[in-house]
Image (cartoon, rainbow, N blue to C red; front, side, top):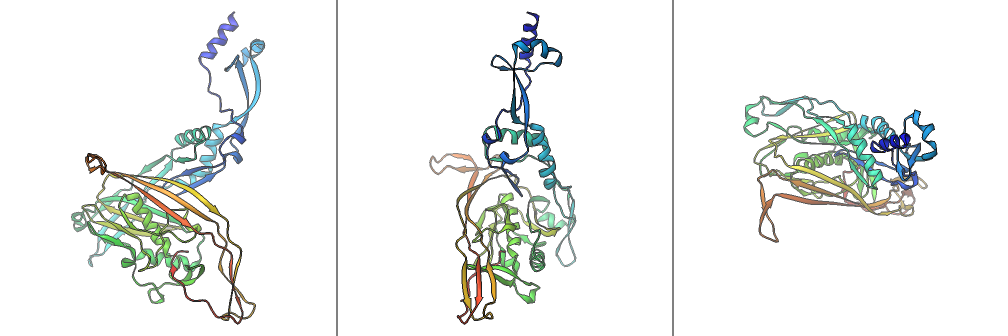
Length: 429
């Protein structure tokens, strides 16, 4: 009787055992995401499972102290099970994900020189680190409940922004509004040169209240006389060298800062096919001024100034002005309509020696990608419901749809055939 009573006491304080899901029963794909990077994982193939001894008293799982096991063995059933190991999930996040997120904050001083040019001292990067305990709990919950997306919780530390120019302060430039970043690690030399030149064109650029920002107007001419080198660009179905190849890294980085700011985007086009430098897919903005542009509206009552630079293999934009207190939620990516690359394409040209071969396209799969940007305005800002005519808190939901074509391996081979006609370009690769 005494033993039964002790068992019942243990049932009253049951320890929480790991999930009993087998590897084959957990999701095969989970996306961990931040506003600057995603990790697509297959939990079935991850080392997050351990074998456990499950103790049961009837249908109830229980935990017993070592001294009671032998005495209680006739009343308790035991079996070996495989379950999800919370500590293994934590260790994975700590070793594989957290280091790619961690960053120390760096402060910035903003001033004007004697020529009226905006100058920056420091990079103004916000500090961040993964909230490891919350992230572990969320990842475990997603696995156990067959959820596809986990927006990782970050602990953020804003930079100190010191504005020394009274003129800038009068324009409402007093704090950081948003930031954007993209990773161009592994880019060829010419591409890296073009990215740095392109970013330098926007450093200190001021956008007035109510002004529509047009990327090409600030970028200016793109040719050899302005320092650009020839690098690969998307030109119709081909990828060929042209001055300014890589400038889409600049426009895409700016676009992500705009997304995070909650400012309205008035024009944006995705690349015709998926380019690895613009991960995560669906948040890129190709440009080829003046035919293809990236535009947005400064709908705040104050000016905005841009800071743009590279550090290592990362491109950055910081926007400074007066905070609007808008809350921005990026929801996605959602993939659909995956298609395999078409068969290899060969074109013959007399511009090459007979038999000489030039690669103008590499095989890539096609896919449609959808994101949603949901923006909540500060409390007190109202909008009129079009259906009911009633006032309600101001919000908007924007669908960001990108269709990426499947592309084949594409070669030009030397022959006596006529050379191909020119194509419209994107400064995108």
